[in-house]
Length: 193
Length: 229
Image (cartoon, rainbow over all chains, first blue to last red; front, side):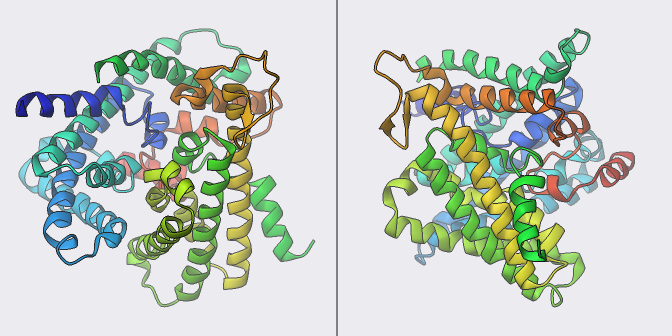
């Protein structure tokens, strides 16, 4: 029972309630960094990493500090500070211990700080009443969902590059229409929940 | 036109955050399922933007330059929390409809972008006017998106039946993909009219991966960062 519900949390977070295509979090980077599969995959990796850790830390803070002292209303302020600090720490830690991973994630790591997806997941975990393990799983699932969406969009954009597109649709509208079609395709997953 | 009305005109027309600057896309797509939600979101954003602009402008000479962004985020987050508590107390229905997107005003790039680009360099009155202008521009923008989505997607406006009964609503428009579709059509229309927007830069330039930095990040900075990486 326990295992199936954790599996459901991953499926829901990654596919059914896809963070980009159905919750519209992280749109800026979704549109901005999706021109190449390789870069979007690195960004996806960095997002999975940061969201998972941020969910864990946010959950611990909420359960052991904010809740017992009746400070729930400070959650937005505390979470955003924690996320900003966390990204810095993760960056320094990776630079020291795993330079290869650090170079692979490159500039994307510091840019994630204020990606709304990270704060959004931390707040959603609290409002859904997830425990520590469930928060980590849901954070991880959300990161995976983000990666799936951005890598798929990058794939579509790489293919579309060679096509002859009417001038007004070139650029942003084309990407937005591709996202529309992806969003419709992701509706198919809603039957899973 | 004096300096103050110029700020408001600038925010609503010349640098409209939604259609020209392409800022705050997350709420612009997420809460525009109905005009009522858009008005609620717009009003909350105006409140946070104006107050945080004034406060940031007042403390701009005290905050050391190196830590100004974290300091701005904390100031903005405090006012977002206050707005959220007010909404929970007095506007329960709209608060439930907007849900997590109210606290997420913290990471709305318009607010941090204006703090960085305007309030940290100008006096409190000008900054307040700038906040009102930008906030109204954002509100007008999201109401426009919500207008099309609600009218054609549900046949209503603010929950009141507008379309004749034989009209079959296009359900898709009030669902998630409809937001991308309507925004895409609007940008396409603006491209066709050759109105210069940041939409294509955002998509092609593609360097800033975060909401809050996209206002502050310039092409140069991005190139520098990329060269470093």
